[in-house]
Image (cartoon, rainbow, N blue to C red; front, side, top):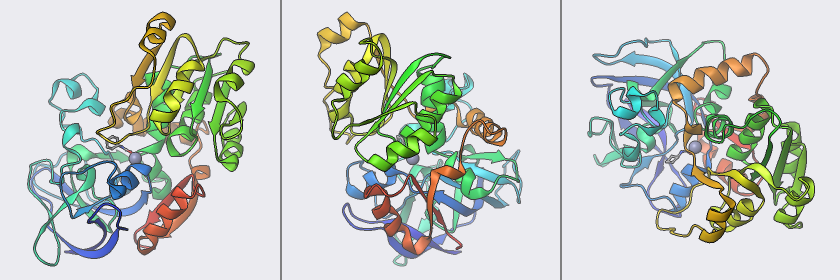
Length: 371
Ligand code: CXF
Ligand code: ZN
């Protein structure tokens, strides 16, 4: 079938809206009608060449939700009509990580930037017959996609799919970083540096975990207002105030139990580290270019302060466990989803959506491919 898709060709170019030929689902795969897909900064990093993918053209988009239209041979546990969230790391189910319930560490993870499907072949071609890749084995910036069953997480049908798309990446990444990586406990103090798509969800994850002090820092003033609505108890305008001094002033000179680096680690890791209490956690969720080697922390301070610096992807929890749990938490009013969506766009306006993200106007833009 021919499918309208937003395609990455060359770093620096906007996404190109094209008709791409999509093959039917093969063994273990499903055809999904994409109802909503979030505009995450990771796709922007790819478009800018800051995060290299192994090939182009490639259909980007990894924060998707939709409805199963058709299933290929050997698909179990999901049927046409089911609502699904697309997991940007597939869970093969058989590697040591999946078998221990840690599908966010699945052996297939390193392959998500390559382009082909899980079986190594392609389902998409352009008008000239060239293979077209799918970012994260998903390629959700399109009206339809063919994905492996390892990439789908069924959810209840009553959750609106624009909100469901958010639990595909930003919400689990942020909420999970607080709950599962740092293991924030009731009464703890938390600093979140960069309150965009990930950071805002760290704020609500910290609130959910019972943190007593939640400090949000950003250079965009209105994001600090949003952060208060999501549970921040204090805010720091990092463009005007010294982050380390401000955090020490708020914590009797001790620092926070957990600091989250959700933007630009080469610039923000050291202040976040210094704003963290002895024996505290520094959790990095933001991505840097693959050839960035700096970890700008003095090793002596790392040793003497006995702090932990840790990375977190997908909220350090299996998407298959975490996503249904987040849907349930939304239902009981424990986390917010609709307030994350600043604006909705048709597929043709996807580059406007990214312009809004980069200008700081959006917390989350969501593309509705059939709008
Ligand atoms: C990223 C996480 C690191 C690998 C590429 C995809 N996820 C989402 O934003
Ligand atoms: Zn993402």
